[in-house]
Length: 480
Image 1 (tube, rainbow, N blue to C red):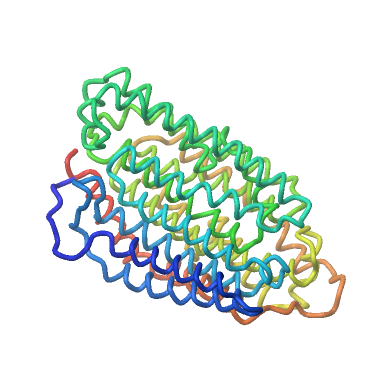
Image 2 (tube, rainbow, N blue to C red):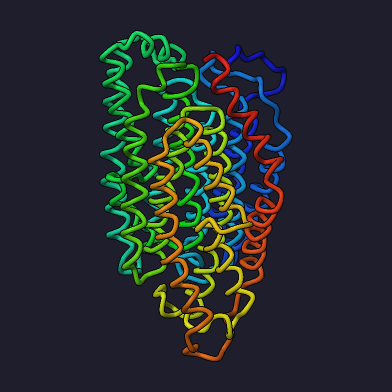
């Protein structure tokens, strides 16, 4: 990537403002009286809406901390995605009536914002130490948020499993980082490409270990074992955010470490990422088939989607990197929307079993239609966002002559459609167990509507999105 030019505006403005918002929500919590937790939620939402708008006005070309923190095209992509997904998650969270949110809602929002702050910093990190610290600032609050509903039976187990596996992955990343530092003598990521170009064995070993640790963060097979229990344990708005934001952070780190500026040395990692992609696609889709809990089904489905994202990374091309970004945004709207519908049904029926969706189309036709479109987008059916996401990923892989991976992905897409359509069959063919419609809180309806708009707009008019992501991807390969 070309040399960044200093900009007179403050590079850390989004992070600083988010820190102020976090403190404001904390102060509200310290003086809470009855309904103040509700006020804390709305304050968090208002702040995130403002930050999201500010992120769209931000321009690349700023640096801070002697180059350790950069504001470039890739970092702005990540920050915008993090803020939009966080806004949707908080909006849906305001529709929850669980006692934990009435008693300790402020705690939830403060910790949520702390994790988001780590993501924003991570998106701009160009130093290995800053990258690791940002990862930990992002990850540690996630363990707390997973077990926030501590009265639920699955919450302690899911949070503990997430914590243990996450801690191991952090240790592996730190161990790999030590090898890289020992070989290049600096934590500046700009020194990595030169070491990769001469195939320094210590650097390659360090990056291989870091790839394993990042595999845990993005939930690629065989590092996915925390996903189903964590998804089942936590509340749906948080899981919706967990399913996209931390994984995007992992892919941003992968772009920084293995793609940006590395040149032909990036091809060294193609077999590794290609293998992880193939195994994740196969295992994720096959393990989703026997699931009877819809959150676990979406968890294993998410593992498969990570495989498709890794396919784009395996292409090691401008189009491949761009389509990974397109896929992430399409997955944001499709997967978060599906989890929001799950939240609505579970709030009414008190269960996440797929059987509770029987006859949903007769009880709440609008809600059933939304879930159907979200599932079809995840399955890659024309002409919603997920269709173009998968098609563009396959095209990027075929351009590089990786026909087997493209064929494997296409075949397993049919498998994915099977278990998505099982849910659709319950909604549209089976008789309802109750004649009463599902009651959906107004804020949750807005969140679902926003996700619907996302998959439809991207599906009907994908070209401007593709062009925008191609511009971002070109900055990664501009020195190759």
